[in-house]
Amino acid sequence: MSKILYAASVPIHLKNFHLPYIDAMVARGDEVWVLCSGEFWQNGIAGSIDLPMKKNMLSPVNFLSALRTVKLLKRERFDLICVHTSLAAFVVRLAVLLAGKGDTKVVNVVHGYLFDKKTNPLRRTILLTAEVILRGVTDRVAVMNRCDLEIAEKHRLGKAVIMIPGVGVGFSRFAAGA
Image (cartoon, rainbow, N blue to C red; front, side, top):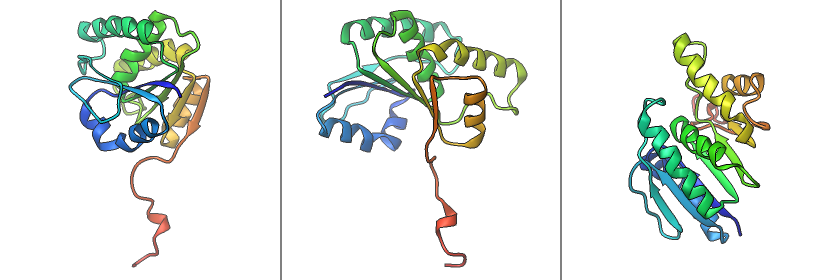
């Protein structure tokens, strides 16, 4: 049994994409906590943390939330932290950096980096710098597309980078015209 913190920016993201995973972890006996900006509750989870986050990464709210998360991490001592969405990934991994990582494993599941070649250069620099600062506490980066894979590998944004099947429909699996 592991003690797991599962984080995303907003509850709807967890509800729409992650309930089967949360339910599976609970079913296998893991102690699962959920962290997001807003109320979230699911049968079987051990704790739900409503943590304010603002879309502007440099907002003081996010830094205060990271400090609040430091206290949670020190108190609960999670075995695994799994972060989703760029904002939650930043806030929670900043808290891990400040709290001291210890033996906790940290997985950042990237749903699309927000600093590809199309992004404003200043914004891209800020976001990439944040990822580089936090790479030391990131054990595994899981990406869903080739562009993110190239970015994560080029900048070594985690101790290991893996490609997972992304979201959407694989049309190549269906016969043409069927």
